[in-house]
Length: 220
Image 1 (cartoon, helix red, strand yellow):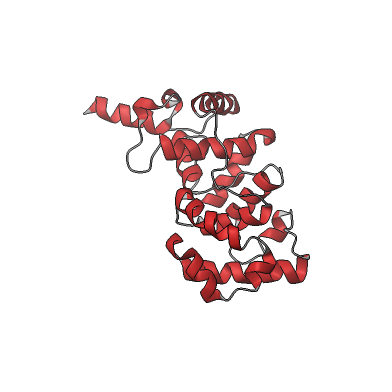
Image 2 (spheres, rainbow, N blue to C red):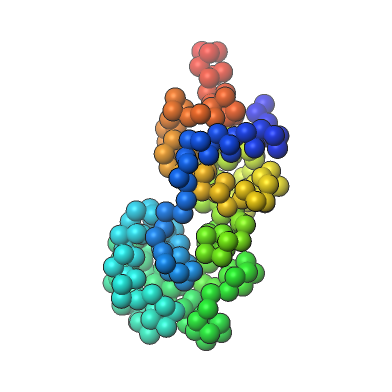
């Protein structure tokens, strides 16, 4: 039965991933905490590449809470239509921008508790903003972080939220933010959802998925 990794093994895995992905970073282009918040809301079920294409033009015209508060939902929809789920995203962006203007003097709050009260902002989005905009250690669990960390065996959880808390226990706090980027980079480039490229992976000897796959093939 595959097991979770020890803290020593987790550290070794992260060190190896750092060698494999030396430039791991947030790939959502932004120039302010608010822009990162909007980009992260747009990234739900949408690639960072597509979001960056949309925000490149969007942020030239609108890049403050006041800007989006003053737009109609229909106007926002038109700007973000190619991101997918644009109707619900436009509504959330409008509502969140209005709250930021009215309640926070157009400043983005820098606590998890306050951020998750904003429409369209869950723990993942809040974690991205806290870690990348404010330098506050956080692990945002998106589909890549969830898949890769459980595949490897760093954690063994059934939900993103439980995965987040388990990763916080398994990884040293000072490595939370960078580990989040490493796992995303690895999920996008090597440990892909449908067909992971195990032959190109430098941590396969640690990986529960790889070990199980090899053992299954040997026994056939």
